[in-house]
Image (cartoon, rainbow, N blue to C red):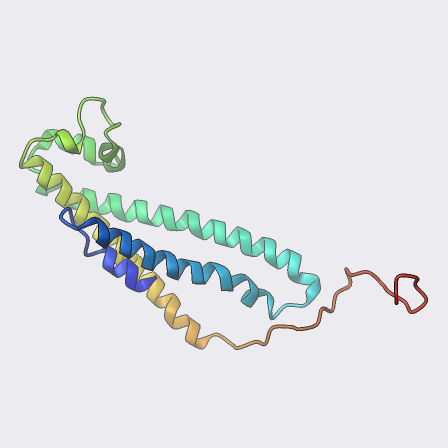
Length: 181
């Protein structure tokens, strides 16, 4: 995941379709590994009676993390657009890009009149470069976050997964029960 996010930071307007699709596959593979193993490894250290509570807490924390991930990227992106807006010479465009409006402008829904695709040069190239720089910083911040996560794995305690279920929630079976054969 860290490698894929790092590769995302190299994308620009001239990057081919194969590059951005390939990079997405790399990031998705890393994300898939995290999503599939993190719950069982979390539950392994807990007694059976805490599994339901731990699972719901885990789901909440994961959802909360996803919200923060989206929020962090928005804050970083908007901050970078604000910081580099002076590179766009057409000051009339500034009102469509500043104060968090860059996302809306990219979709063309900001004004109903024009979008990035309809801009004349050099404004079009300047706005695209502004977006490229801002997105590159977003990707690099997430490289740092996922890189930290990668190194935390090496200090994690190894716990064997249970092979027997010891729970108070199961059915009681006694030897005289007709269902026992």
